[in-house]
Every structure is written in C-alpha cells, then in structure tokens.
Length: 196
Image (cartoon, rainbow, N blue to C red; front, side):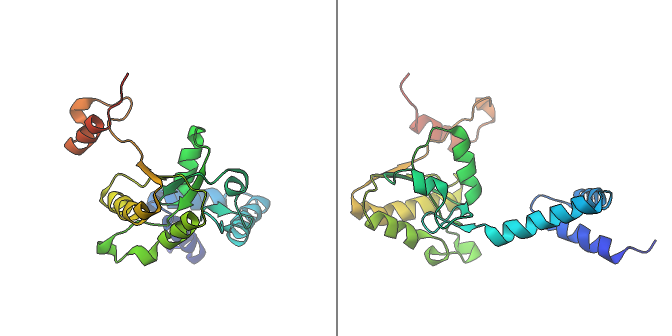
C-alpha cells in the first residue's frame, strides 16, 4: 500500500516530539485526521499563536507572554531558585511553598556536548545578583553529573558576593525501598539527614 505523503509528513512531525515514538505519532495523526475541520484549524492556530506570543522573561528566562513574567513582577528577588529549564519552574510551583523568583539556565554545563558557561544563562544570573537585593541562591539543577557540575561552577562564581548558596536536599524518594536505592542516593540521604 502506498503511503499518503501528507499523512507521512504529519506522522513525522508528531514523532519529532520528545517521548513520542512512531506508533504514538501514528495514533496522534489518525486522531487529528478523524476530527472536524474546526478542531484541526483551532489546534493548528493554538500552536502558531503559542509560538508567536510566548517568549522568555527578560528577567528570569521563564516562558511568558509579557516582557516580565508574573512571578518576577509580583515576588521579591531576595531568594532566587536556579533551574535548568522552564518545565522545572512548573514542577517547583506545583509544591506551592516557594515564594521567591527563578532563574532558568536553559541547559547545564556539558563538555561532552560542547556546552560551556557561555552557552547557558550564567552571566544573566550574575548580573541579577550584582544588581543587589539577593540574599540566597537555591541551586535546583538535576542531581546528575551535568547538574552537579553546573551547581558547583555557579556557586564558586557567586561566593565573592557573600550571599547564601544552597542546594536542594536529595536522597531516598518517598515510597521507595532503601534496598533499591543506589549508593550515591543513600550517601546523599545520610549526609542531608534532618533532626526529627
């Protein structure tokens, strides 16, 4: 059976999305094809509008449709939580306990991927700290090799400013069994233990 070129193109676009394999991309394509023209037009317009209207906050680098995002516009800059990407902001915001601002690096240091300090938003963070008012930086990069290296590099750059620099506590996850935790996780859990 000959493939329909426009269907193949649609499947290809869906399969380029993160975490979407060929089978899922096919399901998405067939789903869209079975919808009416109004739905398809609205779906396409939503993608175009989002791409056109959403950009990075001039202050923190998170996604916004304004010059400065609502978080930066309404919260004090005393505490800044440094994260790898905008989706990390969303994850921390779901907890509803953090009342400070964010700084999105848009990546981490990774020599193997040729990503150095000039390739992520470290200079912008230093500029924010130099402007004053910042009392604490929370390093919330992922607990992997690149995230740890990035956190250590940035903390060394920030030391001369005399502000508090902290790292998210890491250890054994809620609901997991200790026997399945790796050595690094258990070591971190022991190191970051809290008094009860």
